[in-house]
Each structure stands twice: as C-alpha cells, then as structure tokens.
Amino acid sequence: MRFRVTTVATAVTLAVLLALAFLTSRMIEPLLVDSADSELSPVLTAAAAAVMDGRPVESSSPSILAHVLDTAGQPVDGKPAPVLSAADVRVLKAGTPVLRLTDYPPVRWLGTVVSAPDGSQRVVVVGTGLAGYTTAHISTLHWLLVAAIIVAAAGALATWFAVRSALRPVQHMRQAAARLGAGKRLPLPASRDELWALTGALNDLLARRDQAADRLRRFTGDAAHELRSPVASIRVQAEVAVRHPDPELAQEVLTDVVHESERLSALVDGLLTLARSDAGEVPPAEQVDLSAAAYDAAARCPDDGPEVVVHTPAGWCWVLAAHNEVDLVLDNLLRNAARHARSRITVTVIGGSTVTRLVVDDDGGGIPVEHRSRVFDRFYRVQDDRARSSGGTGLGLALVAEVVRRRGGTVRVGESPEGGARFLVSWRTTTVA
Picture 1 (cartoon, rainbow, N blue to C red):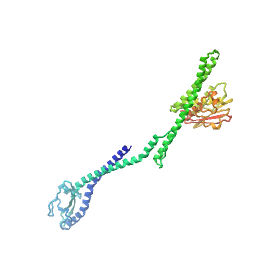
Picture 2: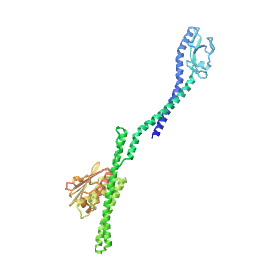
Picture 3: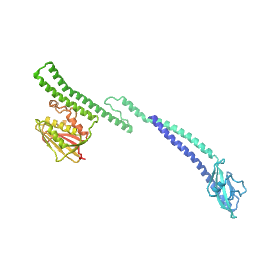
Picture 4: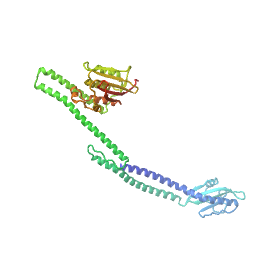
C-alpha cells in the first residue's frame, strides 16, 4: 500500500509540476514583451509630439531606437533605415506592435502615424532589443523542470514516510489480531479517529463470530444428543429382537422402531430445513391465502385430539410467503398446541391492509413467563421429559420463527384468554395481481 500510494502521489505531483513549469516558461515571453512595451510607449509618445512640432526626434535611452519614416517606409530623419520589412511598416502604421524574432536579439517595435507641420504624413517607430529573450525562455524551462523533479522526489519521500507512519497502527493491529485468542478483543486506540472506529467494527465482527461459533457448537451438540436418543433406541430394540427372537413381541418391537424412525426422520427434516435457511436457500415468495391454509391445517389434525376451531374473516387473506412455509408454521403450531391443550385449540386469522395475523390459542397449562423468550431457540424445551415422551424434537417452534422472520414477519408467544399459550404470527399482507 505504501508503494501504491507513494507512486500515485508522486506521479500526480510530478505531472502538475511539469505542467506548471511549461506554463510558467511560456509566460516569460509575454512578460518580457509587456515590459518592453511599457518602456517604449512613453518614448513613442514623445517622438510623435516632436515630429508634429517640427523638432528632431531624439531617443531618451541608447537601448531604444527612434526613427521617422515616410508612408512608404523610407527614413526622412537622416538616420539609417531600420530593419523593417514593408509588411512590418504596414502593421506599424495600423498601430499594431511588431516583434521580429528573426533578429538577434529579437526586437520589439511600436509605431504610429502623425502629421508634420507641412501637412505630410510621417510614420514614427521606436524599438528596443529583447536581450536574453530566447535564453530566458530556455533557462527558465530548464530550471523549472529540475525544480519539478526535485520537489516531486521530496514529495515522494515525504509521502512514503507519512504513509508508513499512518499505517504503523494498522501494522500493530494486524500483529495483535494474529496473537488474538478465543474470546479476546483488539485493544482500542487512544485517539478516537478512523482507526478507532475500524477497531470497534472489527471487535463487533469478532463478537458476532464468537456468538455464531457458540451457537454452532450448541447446535451441533444438541443435534448429536437428539439424534443419539432415537438411534440408540432403535439399535437396542433391534439387538434385543435379534438375540432373543420372540414372535409374540415382534409386533411391539416393530411398532417402537417405526415410532423412533418417524421421530428420527422428523428431526433430520427439521435440521435440513434449518441448515438450508442458514445457508440462505429461501424459496420464491408467492401469494398464499392464509384463511384457506388454516382450514386445511385444521383438517389434517387427528380426530382423537383436541377440538380445533378456526375463525377467519369473510373473503381471502393473502400473505407474502411460500405455501410450504405457511403449512409448516400451521402444522407445527397446531402440533405444539395439541401436545399441551386439554380440549380445545382456537385458530384465528385477522386480516389487515399491511399485516395479516395468525393467532393460535390453546387451553393447556401455558408457558411460564421466564421461558417465553427462549421457546423459539433450537432444541429448547420448557419441560424436557414431557416433551420427549410426547414426541417433540425441540425444533418445531424454531422452524416457525425462522420461516416467518426470513419473510419479514414476526412471531411472539403470550398468554391465551383460554388459560393456555397464545402464539401470534404476523405476515406482510399482499394483494392479488
């Protein structure tokens, strides 16, 4: 980075200085010419006045030439003819200055036309040599180029050390990060600058990484623990059946194996669903009629379970989700309610212009307040033994929370007016295109 920053800064500085050098050298020429014009103008004015008065024209400085010509360009003052071409004389008669770069040194001429006392027209011209005109241009460009290179080199050196000094705290941070242990954080710099903000952001990132790693460790351990139970049960029953074959107990063993296999299959399906969601695999959203889905889910409940009553508004209640997601939410909430309800489960759909709500109430024992913030955690059970005996995997409510939240919805748990638990799910309302 030091090399890149220094290279770019030096290149830009050198380019700017070179452009300034060429521009400045070009400005030397008009400065010399303007200086000569300032010196020649009063001399020309005095000479013109002398011609109009009939007096001889004398130059006030030996470096300035003054001549009086006729309109054809021939001298009438008895002096040698100036080095001017016919074209130069025409230009000077028009009042335009002439710069003769072919002379050595170059000569700057000013001229004007005046009337002599006898009425004849005279051309008065004054000129001076621009000593050092060419040399000044070349020398100025040369020294400016040398100065540009020196300044660019000094700037490169200063930039190198400045960037090195600025990056030294970053180097210290990198070394501290390389030595950072688990659960540790980078030390915050004393100055509250950009590096301080970067260190804080990195510490936040480390905190999120540690939390994710901790969740992954807990999830992996819980998954292994949950999988061990049905697998061990199936293995033990199969080993007993193999070592002690008993036709009278075969049906009971097979029934237990089927029950544990179903529990294992449900657990694996839940784990796969959560893993896909964690990986960002979300099915396309579509319009789902929540009222129709609620009636279908109630019809899938077993007849020997609690009574399921559905209340929906007239018409359709469209939500933005996927059909399998809505079915998963309804099935898991109804199964959870059926495990704890005494006799009745109430499903209510409440439509809205922006949010559509699903409320599932049961008349069971409810969920204590201290457990309500964790019931949507993976593998969390309020009463572990009873949940295992009833066939729960500890993933149902976690799946509900996951599929609802990834669609921008919310899910909460509270107390039902019927005495049990109330689960409130909110989805975004959508209209049929």
